[in-house]
Amino acid sequence: MSDRRDQEVIVRPARPTDLPGLVPSSTALFAEDAGTRDPAVDADWPRTHGADAFAAALDDPARLLLVAERDGEVIGHLSGSLTPASPIRPVKSATLIGMYVRPAHRRARTGTRLVEAFLAWAKERGAAQAEVTAYTDNTDAVRFYERHGFGPQSLTLRHPL
Image 1 (cartoon, rainbow, N blue to C red):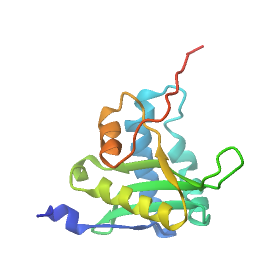
Image 2: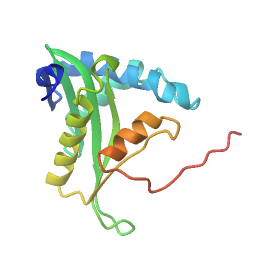
Image 3: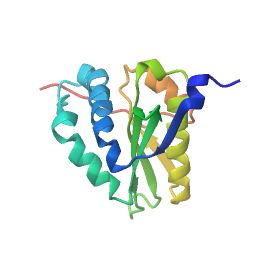
């Protein structure tokens, strides 16, 4: 039996009218994730550049921008992109750039529905693989993506100078 909250949430492609809800969603993602884990990230970036970045993504066929909406309000989002095949990597790839679901709507399949829509979009466009990056100490995110079929491939090690 599905959760009532799941039934009320609509996952759909973003529209220009969603920009006022996408910016706070992205701001919350940055504040909760990169802003607490990576001092090199400007956690205020979504407030100053998010609207322009999202508007550009809406017009780019190689980009995906989804919203999770409940009662007309954006409660989460997912952004993704396609990378064409190249001589060094001869397969088309899809990258899940970022995803956020408000805490009150987590554990109600909203994130799962966003990821499923992303994977379907990638497959429909001929991607042979999908990837996502998560901070290693964000164990909830790592477990979430592993439950959805993602597995570790590489590890980036950083040295602060």
